[in-house]
Length: 264
Length: 264
Image (tube, rainbow over all chains, first blue to last red; front, side):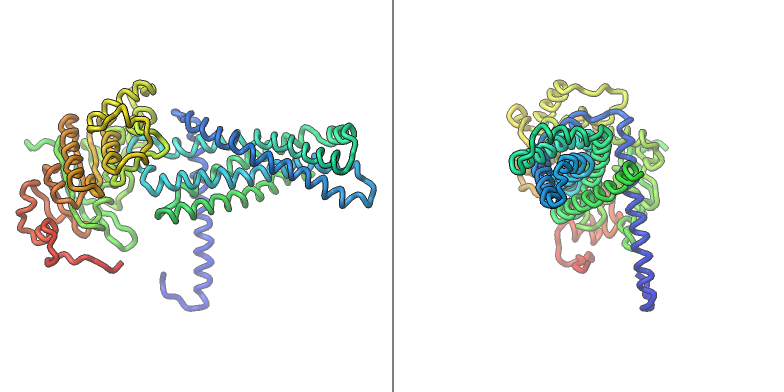
């Protein structure tokens, strides 16, 4: 770095940060486009796709199911303590179903999958990078983006909506169980209130969010893994970055999508 | 011009990282069907040179011609075709640890870019892998379903060699083929390399700092020192060179013109 007078060094550092940020965004965008566009160029690596789909969709089920079940239950409990003083207990079913389908289902399932799958992708691809396996792919005339990234992006985009649908059902079930058993609501009344409150559009938008989240999680996992350098430590750092970046991006996009779809 | 045109022709190749010159004005010719060995100490630029020829890294200036075509002017698909004609044995073997041995060996048949050749089905690919594994002296029937981490280093090297030659490449690269092996296993691998190359009629480039290995596998040898090719000649003249650098290096002498740089 050039020698600079003290007051200006901060300007230089600020400039460097901005430039790095722009560069990083550009690299990421190119990576995402390359990953996505390869869907349309054969060959498509179906084995990797089915493997990832199984890993993301099926093996994440227990984690996502438990998260949704307890979150639905806790919302019922919390809104009951908050609302019993106003005698509007009938609103509990309403709150549970809207909170779960619109927000908690996609966001919590997304965060759990980011921790489980995003980290695993970053670690696997990162290890392949630092042990030259990605170079080996190139020398075997296989495009590493097409082979490693594209099937994972696609699998996560398909798997997340499916997981969220399960999370929606179990979240409502959690709220129902707590309300009926602990708060002694009538089951028929609760179900009627739930069906009355939820609209298909709520669920659909939740699922659209889920697809976007799935894409983001896989993108972050692959991107940070692909860029890891320098052995075990590099892979560890990549894994952390993948999970942190995926979680933050997920919440940012959650806001943006909510703003687009619900705020009128 | 009675001289046949070289298979690989490198002219004025230079590469630097920042202000650090790694390769300076490299000129070399590799004739078809011969074996070219590049020797040099750690950090002399051997690996960078190899990565440039493979197209994994772009040089700052200069040309690399394979069959008379500059590889940096090829289109994306032409480049993929060129890679299809190359094989590489990595220093750490770089086997895909998520795939069984036979899929590693048959990888380019199953997944690689294959122009003018139909993609092999799994049964065919497995048969071919079995044959190639036997060619490198492995008990193919017993190990083809194992995973790379279940094999010893020497066996992994053999599998790496099998993977590199499975698609019958015209050019094969060896990155320190004997490093990390005991002397006997080193000699065995060298013999395998010579054998396989003879059978396939391929052109090979190897980098190594193992003098015995260099003489066993090389027809021509060049020494790289601080990014420059300081000596080229027949392999059997290597040990009798009067170049003081080569003499010091080949005989492993402490005294001489080469000072190891300890400082980073």
